[in-house]
Amino acid sequence: MAKHNELGKKGEQLAVDFLLKKGYDIIERNYRFDKAEVDIIAQQKYTLAIIEVKTRSSTDFGNPQDFVKPKQIKNLVKAVDEYVTVNALDVEVRFDIIAIVKETKDYTIEHLENAFYHF
Image (cartoon, rainbow, N blue to C red):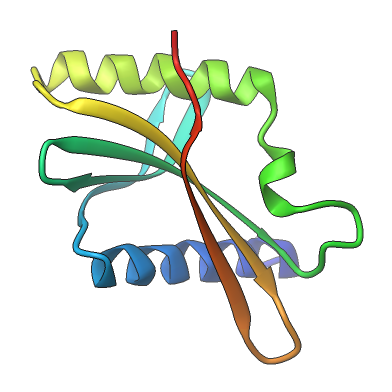
């Protein structure tokens, strides 16, 4: 497996562990619909948190959250709309980003709630 794929998988696991410690229930991982993949679908009380995980080995080219582009957001919203409809969920939906940067031997994790909005 390529190094960036390993880093991405490690980041997603760190994000899951982080969310579990904050009291979230993990509902789905790597949910796919059409052209989108939702990294993590988690729930906390009546809120469905859609989590995009961005992991980088450095911030030399920008912060991890800066790499979530408008087209990706559009695809995520479409996928989540389908997920909520198919599962007949009555919940608030929030889009978050968990930005992870690998430091020398450790990782910094930043949870950006309501990172972007859907229309």
